[in-house]
Length: 300
Image (cartoon, rainbow, N blue to C red; front, top):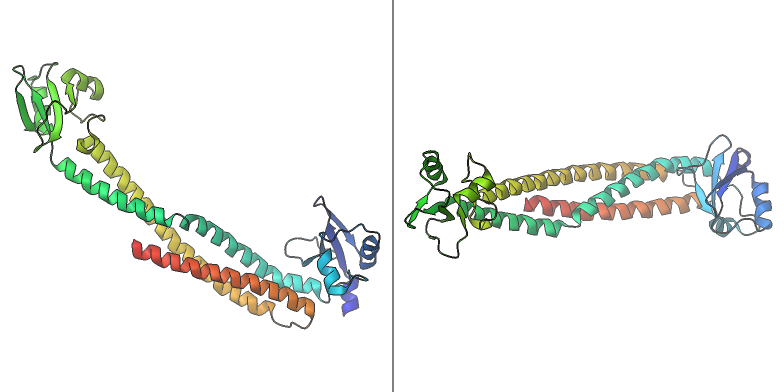
């Protein structure tokens, strides 16, 4: 059985330029090794004669082959090497997918503390701006320089349509319990018409105090609602990723069982141990990420 496998197996290797060479038989590779043409870091692939090597084909460095088979004949084809490589191919692919998911999820979870702080800050801003807009009013000085107000935007707009205002009138935006003084920003009617248009000049100007302007408050509230909704969507994505990771773990367990059946030689045992180590590492990451998921869910 071993000789039949050797005859039907070809060896490829990647040189220092990362170019694929082959196929070669065992004696050809042995000759190249004796002539010093193979560096110990070169990766060798064992495949059937009609196969092209890829990530699913069993591979060893020259140094690993020397450690396994000795320096005299390092290129002996491992017993059932090709079948073992194909048996592990599915486990490799599943592990690769899990590693990609772990990497993506870690990048998303890296700023979870910042996300929490951001939400808290937005909630505080939303409360402040909501309270500010409830008491926001408009004042103006008439031709006698007397202060009139507080008035709502609707009231001032109605008076404007009745042409009660002169272009030189000064308008102030403040809260009902905070009457304007010399330090309060003021705008003439002409300035407001230039800023906001003739039709609705009393939309609160963007350079009035931000915490006391309805336009700014409405805009901030809308943006905060959108950002909070985006974070909720991200949380839902985390939960879906958790479910995918759970399924990936189950599939890896099944592949682990398949890959450990019929282990009857040191080569198989060594390769399977390597796979098991990688799987266990992935499972540890899955456990950590699951804890992160629970923290996120509790927060939201």
